[in-house]
Image (cartoon, rainbow, N blue to C red; front, side, top):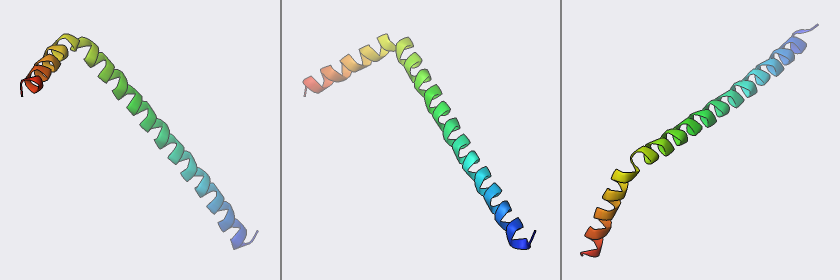
Length: 65
């Protein structure tokens, strides 16, 4: 086996590893976004009465202009 064959094989393995790591990063990002969305939904559900009061106050302030 000559040097070029070894280099080509190493290049293919390296590209394969990089593609795998890129896919893993995308998956981790998707999981993170999903968790943040769930946290946001829970926060809105828990603080809904307070948010409604705040929204009404803003609406009254705007209509008073």
